[in-house]
Image (cartoon, rainbow, N blue to C red; front, side, top):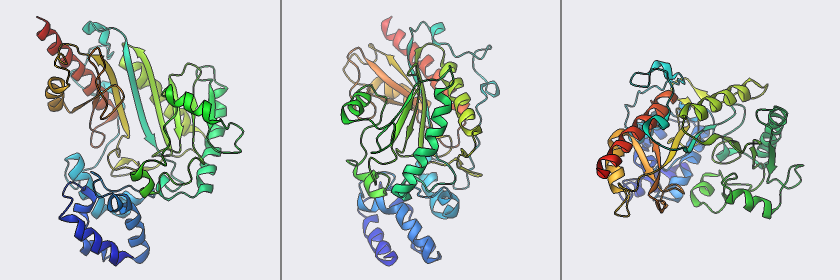
Amino acid sequence: MPSELQEKVETLKGRYPDNIAIQCFDSVYFNTLSDDHKRRLQKCLNSGVENPDSEMGCYACQPSDFDDFKPFFSKVLARHHKVSENARHVNNWDLGSLEGLPADGKLDIAKLGLPPLSMRVRVGRNLREFALPGSMTQNDRIRLENRMMAVFDKLIAMPEFGGAYYSLTPGNPAFIDDNKYNELVDAHIMFKRMDTDRYLTAAGIAADWPFGRGCYVSEDREFIIWVGEEDHLRIMCMKRGTVLNEVFDRLKSALDLVESIEGMEFAYSDDYGVVTSCPTNLGTGMRASLHIALPNLTADGTDAKAKAIAKPLGLSVRGIGGEHTPIGVDGTLDISPSARFCITEAEILAALYKGIVLLKDAEQQIET
């Protein structure tokens, strides 16, 4: 099978120049690996080989994959994140370490003349003792969910969290039926089914659906943890407000709380930071976003002008439903820093704030 993989990848290289994993695959390096490591790296590549139209083309399947296969992944990371092959990631949540922010450290968009807006910060996390989702067995997924349910019991007992856990696993005490599941999906609380996604299916990440999947949501519905999606955990805070620090600080406090519970050791790499299944999220695993109405910049019915301003700032512009969705009828866009790797958590939030400042200025200039 490894030799068949080499032949197939070499054939695909000329036809799919945008598939990063295929382009970074090196047969010489591959042949230096043990048979076990060849099989492991092949599994990482499977999604991109079966779906050569993929842009990334690979997923890590074990917490140590990025380190164990550094000669391959360093090239993948350099190509996608536009960094050097020997780049090292540093994590830092301290906004006080940055320059160019308000003196009081409060990132309050109300001072820019903006009303309360939908703000969200999320991170991906994986537990060190488990295989990543692409290599988990059904039993692994259920054990992970059971481990997390003990954590959720603690959160539910805390006044500042409360809430409930909803499981998709048949036989789980918190199991919900299809009607409740669809209600939670429509409310943007639960994630959509994964077994219809050909990339995640080929990667093994969607296997055993729906076992080991579910979500916890706090009483105020502003703190959510997904279990068993692309990473073991997707942890997110959201709020309609004006102070970006509020969602950022609550998320950091919640992460510290979860990781302080016995058996909750997250997977990290000394060189690459937070370990995630997809190399696009490696480093911080973080996405910080804000929905903002820019009717003047989108008066032509497109987001082209907003993107022209946002791109040099390292910001992504999306529709209100996410990537490849339309802008809101009032010109509302989803704005988010695109970088995850070789950028700190604090820098991501600061980039979002500074980008909003410039976009708001551009919007007002068109007004006048």
